[in-house]
Image (cartoon, rainbow, N blue to C red):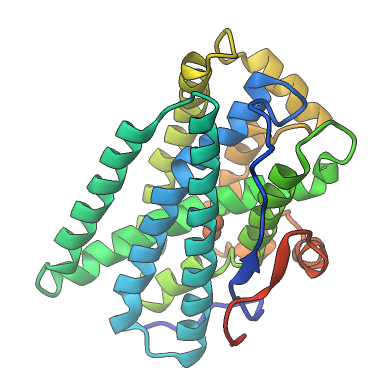
Length: 294
Ligand SMILES: [Fe+2]
Ligand SMILES: [Fe+2]
C-alpha cells in the first residue's frame, strides 16, 4: 500500500436532486441539434460508464486500509450512482422525443455486468491486478470528465444562450460534482499500489477513443433524431466551443498532457474547485445531502 496522495481533502457526499425534465425540448441547447447531441452523448455514456467507475472502486475496498480513503469512496459511489440515474432519465426524455437507444444501451450495460462479475471472481493475485486496471481506466476517464466539467463551469455556464433551465441545472450540477470528486479514483488507484506506467498506458487509448467516438456518437444521435439533419461538423464544434456553448473536445484531449506528468495530481487540473463548490451551494434543483455527510 502507498500513502494517501490526497491533496485536496474535501468531504465528498451525494446530494439529493429534484430535476423536472418533463418540458425539456428535443434540442434543449440553443435549439441546435449538434450542440445538444454533443451533450446528449454524455447521457448515453454516463449511466453505464459511471456504474463501471463504481464497480472499480467497490472492488478496491478490500485493499483499502485508510479510513479517510474509504470515506471518500463512499461519497464517490453515492455521487456517481445519482449521476447515472439522472442521465438515465435524460435518456428516457430523448426516447420520448423519438430518439431510441434502448437496445445498444442494454447491451452496453450487460457487458459491464459480465466484466465486473468476471473480475470479481478472479483468484488473487489476478483479481488485484484486474482491479488496478479498472481503477486506472476510471482515473483516466475521471481526468477527462473533470477537464470537460471544469470548462463547462468556467465558460460562462451557458448564461447567455437559450438553454432549457432544468437540463442546464442538471449538467452544471454534474459538472460541479465531477470537479469536487476528481481526485478520488486517482487517489484510490495509488493507495492500492497503482504505478505511473499503467496509469499512462491506460489513458492514451481512452483519450484517443473519446476523440474519435464522441463525434461518431453525436452523428448517430443526429441520425436517429427525427427532428435533425446532417452529421458532426468539426468546424461547427470549434466555433461553438470558442463561444463557450459546448465543451471543447480538442481542449480536453490537450489536457491529457497534464496526466502524463509523473507528479500529476487531479487537484492541479484547470477547473476551479472553489467555483464548483460555490455553484453547488445554491444550485437549483439540488435539495440537500442524501444521508449523513461524512
Ligand atoms: Fe459523474
Ligand atoms: Fe466522476
